[in-house]
Length: 309
Image (cartoon, rainbow, N blue to C red):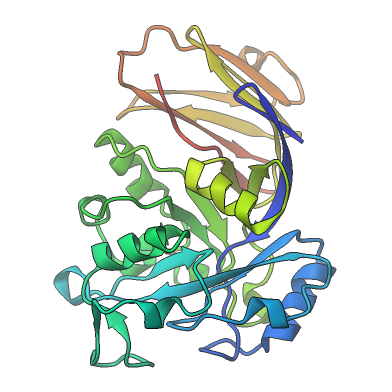
């Protein structure tokens, strides 16, 4: 459970980006599902490249399965977009006429003509659209901000750590400074065994029915993590408060060079084991943003959704 800005909600551990043998992963859908179920996940989205699955025909192994897809419309400077549509229908790609019939170097022929068309189609289909691993792609914050109606971006992508581009926090901060208050997810982007269980998203929802989970994603009721867990988060009358699993450091980031930092041995943290924070941010200018980022003793991070002061 989490107290999410005054609302008590259940929490569900989810991997929202995974590939199977239906595209370029090495696990069959059944193998992928079994591995995540065995690891204690509650939710798994299958997001193969340009391919949706017949979710109802797969054994969920006790989890909730979400239909998903990864799309690659052409992007700026010759960079193809990597966009995740979560919760779209199983026949999603065939239902829209504004897709390209031929795109060079794609694995399948169907593709949307540009990123906005793909995002709008995902949302119209009842899904939630996310920008995948923007740092790995080489996109700028301005380019990502040019596309409207994302449900969020991937702040951490475990698969792309092999070239040191797994963390898109800098790009995220730049978007927040520009007024685009998008939340963020952490994902595995599973392709092979080395990509398993490195980052996940905690969805705060009344139940783990697909409709409730997608509604929570569209509302921004989630946070990204590699391990640390949020228990309570609130902001009222200029006071930011949070409770969480034991951490070594906590940063309350805000616009440009401003912010607040606390360590486990810092008396200013108010808690020797750093399990909670209470920070008066009343002096920040109106319109400022805040986001909490935690780090445990093993160096694993947690990224809370941003809020506006």
